[in-house]
Image 1: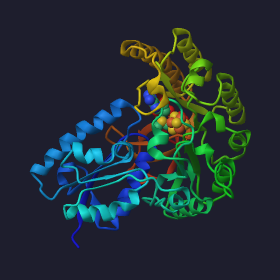
Image 2 (image 1 turned 180 degrees about the vertical axis):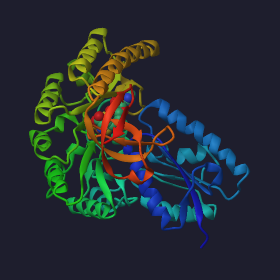
Image 3 (image 1 turned 90 degrees about the vertical axis):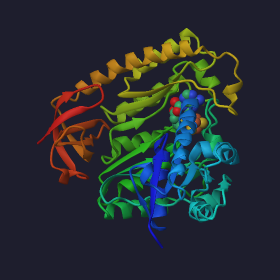
Image 4 (image 1 turned 180 degrees about the horizontal axis):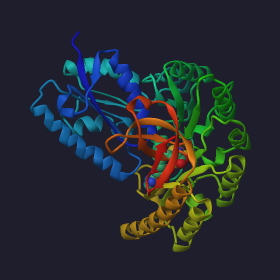
Length: 438
Ligand code: SAM
Ligand code: SF4
């Protein structure tokens, strides 16, 4: 069999990034080799995101663009996967006659068969949801590249149905992967030279809650931390309602757990949180943040905020601003509310104008930028252990991450990539730190 060339473009969250990594690993068994540009490929896959309207539009524009490559390469196969594919299914095949296949968030394992059919001119859309037990067997393992940091998916899906969010509709219900499979995968990655794992899930700290016989997420973390050779553990994303005392205690007890937590608040006003169906109050959220800061002094906190949710008053927005100042996030991923068809909030009538949403977003970003810079400057002259991830932007520079998750650039040899090295911080900017190897 001849080798094929695969180009894959990934949109959205780390779950999608990890899904793409697993697709690449799976297709390498069918002799697909990864290439860096769509013109070199005989298979193009788009792994898509539909969390906001803008992300979805981007996918459609890109797809129109890529389909034109079929004029110069008649053998080219184009496939669409991920959340837009799950949502649109067959309709994507109708809207884009040059797309050959559509696979959903639960049907990645069908891809090799769909590709064979596509080569015989059979266009398929497979977007069925698989039930819990079957799905636990369908988690393809990540294959480590033998160094550095590696994503490991521990759960998929979401049962929370926040009123604005499309994820439960396109990713299905929460399913936790078996603990023994996760531990076995991490052991294998560590043996291949991986030093850090990032545990992934839409609500990673709901791990095990809906499955008898599985450990809690905190127990899983303790089992993972006990693995020899593994040096760092991170996880994302956590839900504030499941940020238990048991989990927070891990930050006090497990030195391998990095000093960083991603805990999205979404809003600071209880009225908005209730309409968002988030399942916690501002007071509960701040209580969890304080407990985390006590368990691990200096912990870096990042979060997500949605501004301009339907009915958000100026007073509600001020409560979000005061929450941001009180938490002192190292970074906030902030978004203007985008109605998603099919979600409950899409029927809420008090939509804010685009102008008002953008105005509030700009105010939030400006406040957060100041806090981020202050926090970045607090690292000046400190010693940090950096996991070197790759080449930096400037010649001779390497780039890596501190325990806090901050990006640090410094001069060094590429042979250090994948290793932990000590660095002293010499400059602090808005988006990164600069250091010198000790
Ligand atoms: N599971 C995570 C949680 O509970 O926070 C978040 C997953 S979601 C894919 C990533 C982020 O997108 C959310 O935290 C939220 O801030 C944002 N988001 C989701 N739906 C949105 C919408 N309709 N409009 C704007 N932002 C949205
Ligand atoms: Fe979406 Fe809420 Fe589930 Fe996060 S918890 S994925 S925001 S529904």
